[in-house]
Amino acid sequence: MTILFCGNNTFDFAGGGAEVTDVAGRVSAYSASSILLTLPLSSLAGLPIFRNIGSYTGDFWAHFRMHTPKDMSATGTSRRFLSIADEAGALLIAVEGVASASTWRVNAYGDTTVAGAAFPMATDTTLLVDVKVTVNSTNIITEVYIGGVLASTATASNAVAIKGQPYRFTLDCKGLSTSGITANRYLYLSEFIFASDESTVGLRLVTLIPAAIGTYFDWTGGVAEISDGNLATSAIAAVSALKLSWLPSVYGGPGSPTAIRAVVSRVRASKGAGGPQRLKHFLRKSTVNYSGTTALVGALGLDRTMQVWDSCPWTGVAWVTGDLTSMEAGIETAA
Figure (tube, rainbow, N blue to C red):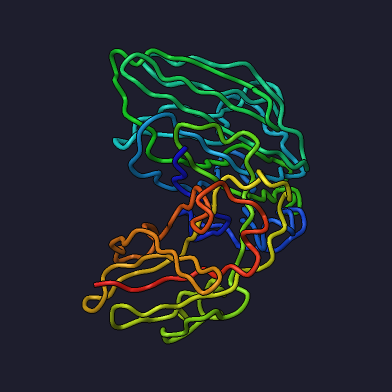
């Protein structure tokens, strides 16, 4: 599997939302915060947030945790919960409403539109959602899992339209609530994982945040500046080969030796007009640094600052929870 993205934060998605610590929105041991969408009073107005997936090959998988609103009484086929489109903007699949309240299905949009079976999404309930999309020159195939169980699937021909790979993931959030009561319209989202060529069903995201400064403090600014979510208080490095490292917060996920699929080091960064243009992540254990790939940083600071560690670099085998003890994470500038 290739992990394409993981995160819990509002800045990971264009379109809005608020970063909150409400109990309903997250598992406290897994996530320090979640995304809150306060849905509009007009049931069909929607509150879309989206993220571009980027380049990859194979099947696309999306996973997230959500806590549904207290009211999901909107009816009719104009409702749309989520959609996935190719790079040209052509719709590939969508989870859309059917005639009865709180009932949904996945539709595949190929040469014709093919509807999957209907399934419910209960109100004021936490759900784990996984969506798979396969696109080739023959078919568009999609599956939706709720709580790890296949809820709806659809296959549409792609022989004429020949639409491309999934590129844009959108939570349209259209037609979820009609009560007119603000407290009934809260939708919480967390634990997003995008991946290719391996099922995300059963995966969970545990987010560790910087808790204390580590061995290296070469940058201007440190743990407080990179963990407060405020772009105005970022850490800055003006030359190459400067390191900043931190001790992550305590891991609160499953404790079995094989529970950790991968460790992902991720920061939001942007390059200046001059100075270092690249960044590399590193992990540090027992006085030894283990460096990731040096990558060019974008000018806007939204992506391209992630390193996936599929196995533990100091053992060379799968991660176990003990590997996270006294581990540091860090970043280093490069020309």
